[in-house]
Image 1 (cartoon, rainbow, N blue to C red):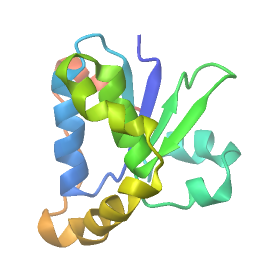
Image 2 (tube, rainbow, N blue to C red; image 1 turned 45 degrees about the vertical axis):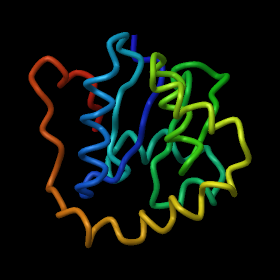
Image 3 (cartoon, rainbow, N blue to C red; image 1 turned 135 degrees about the horizontal axis):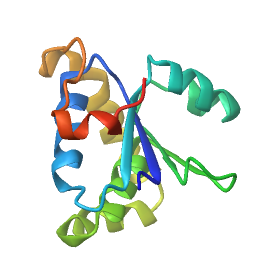
Amino acid sequence: MYDHLIFYDGQCGLCDRAVHIVLKADHQYLFAFAPLQGHTAASLLKDIPEELRGADSVILIENYKLPSRHVSIRSKAAFRTCWLLGGWYRLIGWKGFLPAWLFDWGYRLIATNRHRLFPPVSCIVPDLADKERFLD
């Protein structure tokens, strides 16, 4: 239960929508969530390379409770999340097996403009049933 951890911008409206999409699709309860601005991010991301830690981007840590963690960032994290969700999301997720540079330019373009395109939120308010999936 909750094998993988998704870090997201806790003040981003687009990120809020993406987290809710993953919550709705994650019937196997594979994912937990934590804001990049929280204590969990400060604790777990301190051991990953600086270029990943400093990125204002979605970060996926697969098997985050185990020593054999795998870290993905930007488009790789988004595609890998889709792949792990399974079902028809794998039609999107297979792109994660391609080189990141093919998609990161588009990811960066959207990420740069996300605060203008999507109103900022103060924090994601999960349903009571999903509250335990959110780490601070």
